[in-house]
Image 1 (cartoon, rainbow, N blue to C red):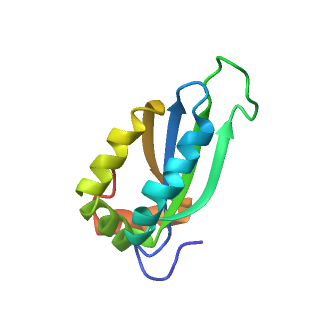
Image 2: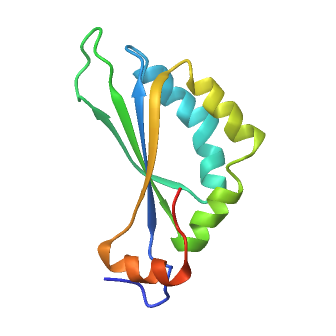
Length: 124
């Protein structure tokens, strides 16, 4: 069900990071210490952290899936306007020691689409 105010439905940011083998704990520690506080200050709320595969096998890389929620279209643009900071750039440089690759996708409830489209472009 869509919110009554177009564009106020939550926007979900889905980050998937393919880690280098054996880097799970170091990555999660760095995420908590160096990225999450700033991300939350930019309006991102981390609502889920998942690991796949959910086992640790030597030599097998794991992916971390982070699901963040933003306060609608306004929250999306607030996040985007602050993503070019030195702090964010430094985080992604630091991540190079932990990850092989990363993707970021945006998602919302199906009922939110019409409201988002009425407001214009919303993509990464």
